[in-house]
Image (tube, helix red, strand yellow):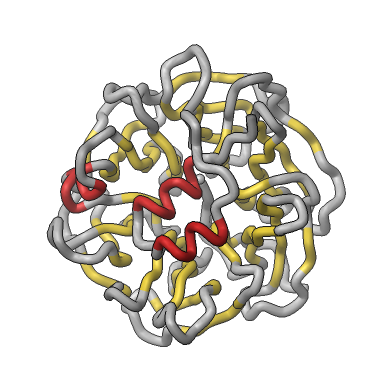
Length: 326
């Protein structure tokens, strides 16, 4: 049976209208379940995924951050990509009928290397460590504690387990702090109301110092550290009844600040920092009735909202690296 990773399930949990989900979700998760990185540097190329109806799944593309020079990188079903700190490699997750694994590829689509070889198991949502030697990943399925793990970026060997979800659900979206000491992630738990299902956390990379940043009722997902480590961008709510919007928050959980507001018509989420720390890139639309969903950028203060890539097929899951523009 074909499974769907939780990245798509969590789009539904967040702010995407049901009609959009019905169009772009191929199969819901049966028991299963995305990660990215912006390390300090010059703004280079971006990666993202588009849904391909011919295969009923996503594939990964690269482009300049103005949308030019778009090229397809993967042909296999694949969703989540992340640039290595030096911009020379892209890690991504890919899928077959029963499993999800991690591979790396060059920015031109050459040099595919499969790192993990799981069967009837899922390792997804890769995020590079700042030194480029490890990847933080999510393991939401299998006969092992569901949580965040660290694997070797060359061999794919599992090095350590960082978290274990205590609610029998998922930990995902791991994101390293620029100093490599902390990992931000989101934690899901089962609940009656969808506003009670997810919260943002940070934990030391050795698994100690677990700290919850957002309350369950205010959501808190898709965390990403700013390149200077001073802020984390998240999709969250100012209060339980408000739409989930894009905010920044301090790593200690203080200073929640609105960047882009969502309404009943506008919907944006999954924001990632640019390597220079000046901009954010994210997916969505300011008006789902009239404007095709796409990828957008905005200055970190919320100004200069600009669409850079549109559909169809609609783009999802952006990541921004330092690989030179083409």
